[in-house]
Image (spheres, rainbow over the protein chains, first blue to last red):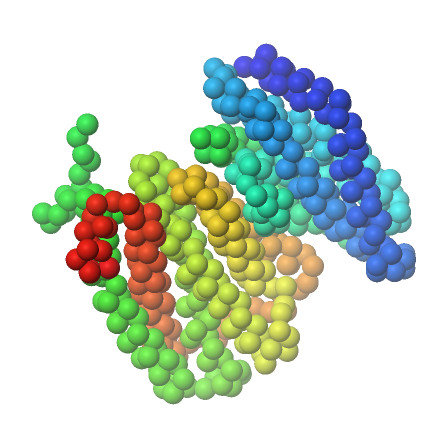
Length: 222
Length: 255
């Protein structure tokens, strides 16, 4: 079990490292989208403070979603995916490893960058930790759930928009609870309840989505 | 390998898992459901619009409830039925179950849209706004997006077998998510705004109103069944157009 996890994660991270610009593009997309909001809405500090959690979370959602398309695409194109489906190792394990590697490459940078972007919005410094923790718990769910959509739309025309239509409605609970954690903390209620729900969703998603991703990959590669 | 059987009342019901056997059965059932739907809709609308008393708080505008509630019930129920047939299709590998699920999707989307539209029309005179980010409205909107995703995925995949199974996985994932979405939206709603809009505390209903709602609900059910059966017949013909039994029906002029 563990060697296959390690091998797949190492391979995916190495591939991502060799194609660093792909990763950078997704991160820059996140930065640019977040920076557009003050330009469109106006730089009134109170307003910016109020919309910061929602804006950062929505931008993270979009950045995660855009990076989903390349989760399985190149492996599907060059036949590596077929080898993974044929391999003796359980497909669920391979899938978990790939989703984890994908999250490290496309989710984790967003988590790390988010406090800097929050400063642009003059978010209270005591909330920065809440923001980071909410994204840290939430972005893996986005990768897990999004991988189902990526697997289902493998090799279809119009894949990007289709993927958005499939995946974004499923992201709604994570968005609500993730951004809600900051609102609750700002209102003095404490974000503990939101963190617990996010952690619960993460446990649920890591337990069940690998089955769905594996099933979807088998269907798409058939 | 022996055929699985489920015998109730001298009929082997699994026989109807085959599209060839189901096609005439569906054709025979459609008129019944369609006529019941038409009769109940007429009776329900008559009771709703002419017999039921005027609401003392909302006046006449509440009467849209007779369409709105039936549509909202169906919108959620049809998604569950779709998920059920998708699950059956994935487990037993029966083509007809997948066809049934995809035949239900447009009707479900239609009812979700009607529920949203009538809700908006109702909200204008009673709440003073076309749209409120009320928990039910919001989850209904997301349900509509889920239906659209299902329909878009079905339309994007050319090969029927892959389309069937991919849509089935999506329907099941969506069905698991529907309660999570509902509760998160509800929670979000209570955090962001007070419960200014509450339908649950509505005054108790007059008996005639209840009769009208039940009639409209029966009409919505039977209409959905008739529409889904009609659509599934078209899907069967499309998929089985190369099969002998379809050719024979065609030669006999019975299509």
